[in-house]
Image (tube, rainbow, N blue to C red):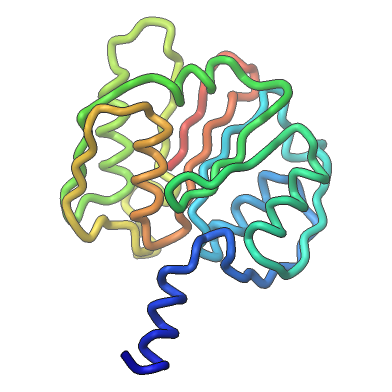
Length: 200
């Protein structure tokens, strides 16, 4: 194997937390998560119960590896911690956790499949249908890109994906990892804390 080919293989095999990211930002953790996802870092974000994008602590981020940036985030906003799971970064509350959000992510569903060519909106609909008819759920599902994708963003799955029965968090992680554009899912309480908002 040539040195050039070996170098390419090493970059592809490089763990996500070792990837270097150029960033210079002062923002809430919510904004930081979106900025990292826009740079191609697969992320799942579970918001704490009393989060507020306007009043939450601001984090200051500078260039570094994903690991360095994440460590900096949770050092500055101590409500959260992070972990890497199968190539996806999960940021979750260690204080003030929203019980409805935690229960949703732990719920077992499936098996679950998406077909080649399915987009985010149809995938969100498919997941939402699994929760139809359950009383007291009050879960709102939304597509990150939106229905119709009027900007023509790359959000279609390139191949069929079949997942065995698992918890919601695992399936969201796998779906997110397969996304070519802004790989992100978020689970947040609604403003009145009565509903759960799920965006993928």
